[in-house]
Length: 188
Image (cartoon, rainbow, N blue to C red; front, side):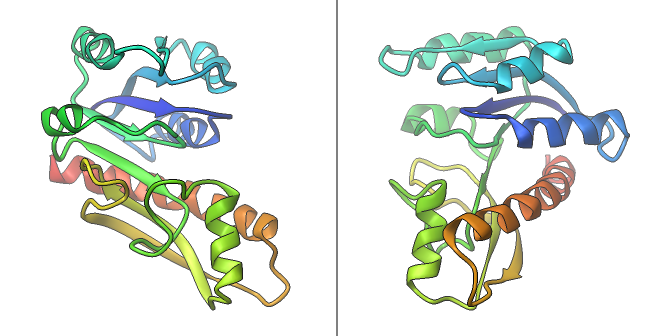
């Protein structure tokens, strides 16, 4: 698999994928391109590992620029790992069943527009839910509505805050992401 990893932030999920490839927990997989929608630390991670990096301006008509980069780097699959921009309908159609997203909740709960970061975890706390988790799903034009590839759960303790739950889920995300990429590879 020739991956492009789309990011918006620190890039710890990107690093998780890099580490899995370097330690051969992920085989027949190569990150050929990292794409970002803003200036972020993930750029440093990509450059440190000599992975081409492309950043676009969300305020422009960026879709064709990104498609050109994906073609130039011969990308076969895309992983959204902490990517906050919404992909346009046409982009999702072109890459149908070739894009997966990591979401910090048990979809279909706590998904959709505006549900990211601490907002997701606060919603779980506010609803007094007994469990939460992480989901990897296929990307469609509907936000967080694609078919689920894999989910992992964890308990929500009475003492959890949005911040402590976020830490738990973040650890879980690193585990589920590698398993999901392996499944993604098998389904290609």
